[in-house]
Length: 337
View 1: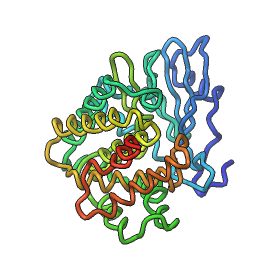
View 2: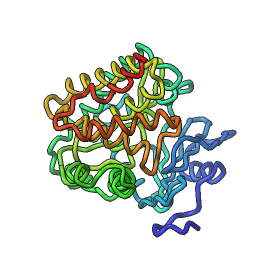
View 3: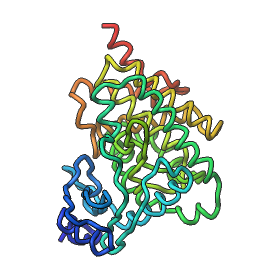
C-alpha cells in the first residue's frame, strides 16, 4: 500500500488491467496488454483485442523524485470532462467506455494505430503540418471554452479546484516561491487569478504530450486537472510548452513560434476577445519557469537550455507590459550568434 495521505488501491499493471476490462464485458480475447510510459500522475495500460482500449489509473503519489501527492478521486473529474469535451468535439476526444471509481480507473477507446503524441513529433522535427495542427488545436480548445462560458450548471459540476491546486498551482507556482526562483509578489497575483476566476471548463493539462496526432486526425486526452476556471491557463500552458521546446530546438524556433501563433489564432476564431496577450505571456512565463525549477522539470532540457528558459521567464514576468515575442527573444539572440 502507498504511504500517501490519500487512499490508493493496488497499483494497476497489465494483468489487473486485463481483468478489469474483462469484468466490464469488453472483449479482450487473445489480447496483449502493455504499460505505456511518459506520464507521472497515472499508470496507463494499452490493451489490444477485439477493441483496442486504454486503462488508466490515477495515482495518489506521483512518480517523481520529490514528494508530490494528489487526490486520486480526480479520475472521476476526468470522466466527466472527457464526456463533456467529447460532446462538443466528438472527433477530437476519445470515448470513455467505463470507469471503476473505487480503483480510480478509467477505460477508454485507444487512438488508431500509428498515431503519436504530439510532443514526440515536435521534438523529432516540427514542420508546416504542425502549424496546421496548432491552429486546429486552438479551435478545439476555443470551442470548449466558448460552449461552457459562464455556464452556471457546469460551474457547479466542475467547481473542483483541489486537483488543479495539487497538480498545478502548488507544484508549479508555489514551488517557484519556495525555491526562491520568483518572488511571491510577482506570482501571487497570477495564483490569485487562476484560483478565483470562474469563466469556463478548463482542461488544465494542455501540453503536446496530451495531444495525439495522426494523418489526418487529432485527439486531446488526460483531463484529470479539468475544472471551472480561467480560460487563459489552457492557452498559456500550451504556449509555454512550445516556447520551452524552442530553446531545445533553436533551429526550429521559428516553426514552434509559428505553431504558437497559429494556436492563438485558432483559439480566437472559436472564442474571440476573451484572453489577452499580456495575460497569456505572464502565465506562460510562470509555467516556463516551473518547467525548470518546479516539481516536474522538462527532462529534455540541457543545463544551458534550462538556464535560458528560466532567464527568459523571469524577464517576461518582470516586464510591466509583456509582449508575446518576449518568450522567443532569447532564441532569436541565440540564432544570431
